[in-house]
Image 1 (cartoon, rainbow, N blue to C red):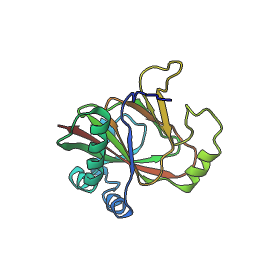
Image 2: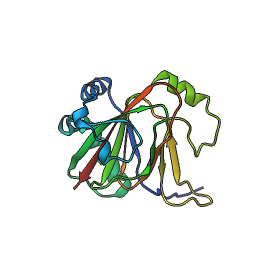
Image 3: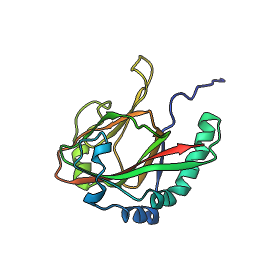
Image 4: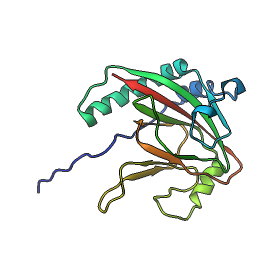
Length: 193
């Protein structure tokens, strides 16, 4: 039996950072009130701070190269350059969330999970609800409208060290959690040539 299938929709790339690289990234994260990023962001998160984008992209370089390989495979187009435009760290606490949004002034967006506390993992494992909702602390990506026999929503519960890279106009959101803890992630935007 011969069959074919179509690859369809946006590329959401995920890769796990090497431990040494994750350690380097963690050193970039500081609660520096002089670098408050909230005025330019959509989230309902009280602690969001700009980080050094040049140091961050240097650490990410091998992972961005892997993304470029997958981009070529998925879209049948080459990327000759990936340039970082902005980066910031999010310290998300109980009750905070990020509403459905997409990013502007870039072509790619990303999120890297730095810290996912055990208490949040436990809360998520006890969640009872639909997969579409994803549960406490999850990130969801939405593409197009919901139709029968199609998937337009993918939800992931974050794991420490995982980096997601996706098109800037892919809507995404983060659900709130109740646990008294802090989940740390870094977001960054890129342009490509």
